Image 1 (cartoon, one colour):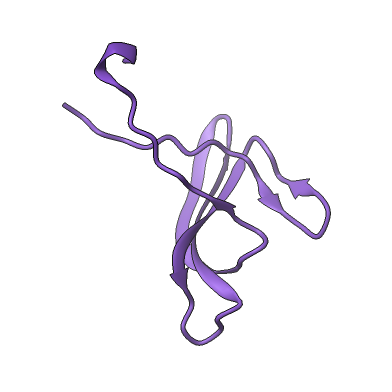
Image 2 (cartoon, helix red, strand yellow):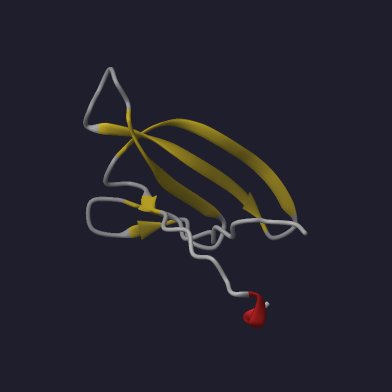
Length: 78
């Protein structure tokens, strides 16, 4: 049986807005970047509806990404 996590293309956060919704996603890990504790490790991806363009793990500002909370879907709902 395959296991996976779905991460929607929710964009990223700026000072007061969200940007690049529907084709970019930035998600924070719980690990701080050791050389700059105001930053965290992030998983980011971007593309368009027809082409997958990029996926990367990198350093990012805490406020830009979204936090991830994994949820297990019961077998009865699959």
